[in-house]
Length: 132
Image (cartoon, rainbow, N blue to C red; front, top):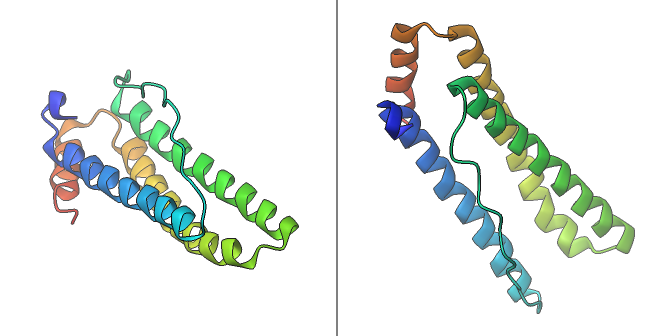
């Protein structure tokens, strides 16, 4: 988004990325605290360009929905094993995903409504720059 001069969008997603790193560290620390070992594997290069702003926001929304499904799968596995500690830990992430999916959906809805109307897009950009 920096490339497009959309500093607010860029800021929004930088804040989002920092939040996601925090979530990853929470999982990392939980595994170690529980006596496990974290083994990191190679991560594929993420997508870095999109055909439109709408396409980028759609991918953001889909990623949040996919993350939610993964947490549900982990919760199901913890329940099958009767692991109450892991269930308790995962509940925080599942609750967090409600907010994450809602925020992504709200942004996607706004982008779809705006379409290519540049003045409104710039207003949204200014609003996104306010994210803390």
